Image 1 (tube, protein in one colour):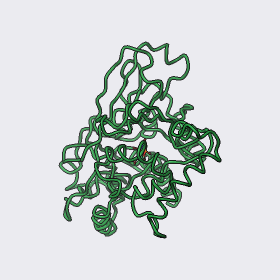
Image 2 (spheres, rainbow, N blue to C red):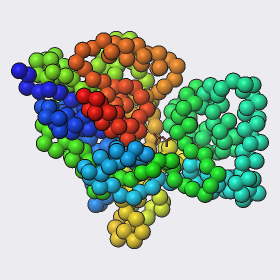
Image 3 (cartoon, helix red, strand yellow):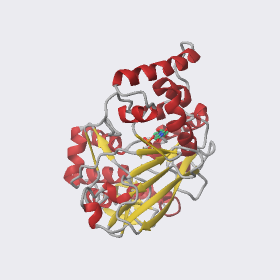
Length: 376
Ligand code: UDP
């Protein structure tokens, strides 16, 4: 008999949720992670009593009540509502695109009818250029969605900084993530539920992994790959898809992010958790002020310092952390070749953003694992 039912490679949200449900089903699991801590990119570090999202801001949001109820059984979530600000050459706009944005963008717009008319006028130009075609890339999609003024000030340069590619080379779906609303509502998400685990994401990960055997600082490829089949019945692999197959068809491209984090000697640096810098002349894409994810009202001032992170987007090179899959034509073809190989593997589950090469939010990951176990 093998020691484990599952060897789970990677302790991010997919691996930790999988381990949780497997354990609940009476399965024996070993979770391994090459980093010195659990949680993957959800990991938080406490600085000045503030939970700092070390690998980028994470806001949990979903309309799936079952998913929301489940994560709240692991750790209660707070009432944080994401409402980022965009800074374009010092002008501040509300996101997502809503009446607050439109009234600031066009001084003569005050009502939804006026905003709709202004956007319709600009959309007409974009649709005419398409001549009956569907938008084929992010630029065409954005121009059809909100017109040229918003595209130029709030989308074009930000997107090019984030992805390192022209908007005309990026897939349209990326921009369809953002709502466009003709009401004064700065909530970035359309979902019914959103928040941050009270006490930080490590509580979510620790809760999911409670009672599960975990080893950090171990590398699957050098420490486990050659003999995992003698150790476990099934491998759950959440690392990069191309790496598993030793880059046989070539390397997939990713975007990575680096952070410059510092403590500021003021209780309230920017008045919001997320400020996006949407022009090219600022080298970072956004500035995160972590305390606003968990401190509200007077609590902000009870803590005299604050921690901020500037976020820089860059092309991934080996040795860095892969963050965003790049779903352009070239990488989609390559990823599909690897997915076909993955399908042929027996007793291996490939799951999560890296192993599926898919731009996932957190909730769909939990949902996917829950569905998998419901089926089992
Ligand atoms: N985006 C933009 N301007 C902004 C914020 C977002 O143009 O101020 C676009 C950009 O192309 C980005 C996409 O919207 O890649 C999705 O943004 P989101 O904030 O949802 O991305 P994530 O939080 O996953 O980085």
